[in-house]
Length: 410
Ligand SMILES: Cc1ncc(C[n+]2csc(CCOP(=O)(O)OP(=O)(O)O)c2C)c(N)n1
Ligand SMILES: [Mg+2]
Image (cartoon, rainbow, N blue to C red; front, side, top):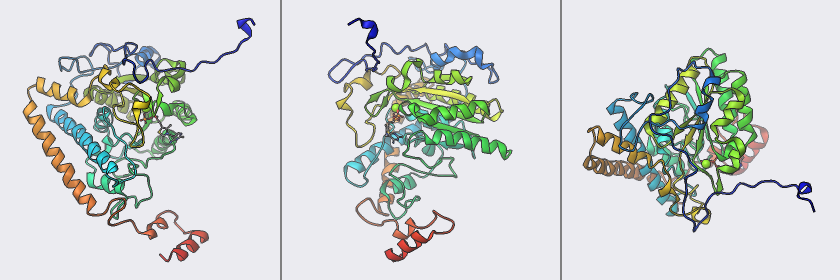
């Protein structure tokens, strides 16, 4: 039969599978400092190529170079390093707590710490994030107590969310962290709506939407872009491309668009790609996008190019779908090591002080964990009251819930 009559469709496949040799030669990495920094009121049509490049500040020698460098003081950089180290240590302890049965579920940020930690420092109090489950750095870098996060993970008697949410789905209005939803992408359109509401009420607070590469396949992502571009909403549209969506590689959700940032171009939204493992670059690009929102210049789409080094969650085993050494081959390195090397290069940090800081941070995290565990863990100690299930949900309890509450005797 003639080939012309045979219809086909295409299923993208990752370059390498378990057992193969990791290969990222298809990921083009521009030199640090090589991407220009346009004015924030630039005509979006003139910067379309930025959706296909990668803004980078830290070079291999640990120097900060180019037009996006120089925004942070040494003190701010040292603080950033501590935030990322704290998040990594917190993750390791909580992952272990999950294995010990103290919580049912955990999700790590390994390799992606710079994205949420650096972005938070570019925001102002009152700004609102609409995060996914992989942005706990927004809380840590804003000084939200680790004990409160652990109480939530343990669903114990001090859980601020009273056991109503899956572990790690934090919520804190005071810290600009909107309740996480397990239904992926719903938060993206909510962020745009919140930003529009902020403008309607003549406020000065902006919104930040967060989504993973895989979840951009959802309709909500596209609907959010329509609203954001049409109404020039004061929102930053963040896409964290960590190469994987559980076992699905990023090529599936990206499809033919070349990059995730390029998705914004069809909407006339300025769209940038940034090295997600470069604390300085993430912060600089976040500042640029946030200033655009604050100055009523409209939305910006930012793709953070990073790599999910850990498993998707405590329920996942990545050795089933990708080579074990793939993370070692990732060409953008590790965000903590890169910032550490930069600070050592600047002579404001040493290997010795780094080791000491690791020990101090571990001690702080263990102390927080002890305190949280004194309020209970999944199967032991204090629990939220059954009563909490009925309270704080409706202004007036509907009759069927009143009946259920009576039956439960609470
Ligand atoms: C609407 C919806 N579809 C599917 C899922 C199941 N699910 C949970 S996480 C996930 C992968 C998301 O990947 P990505 O958006 O790349 O974020 P990452 O986990 O890599 O940070 C999927 C498919 C879900 N929670 N919600
Ligand atoms: Mg992903």
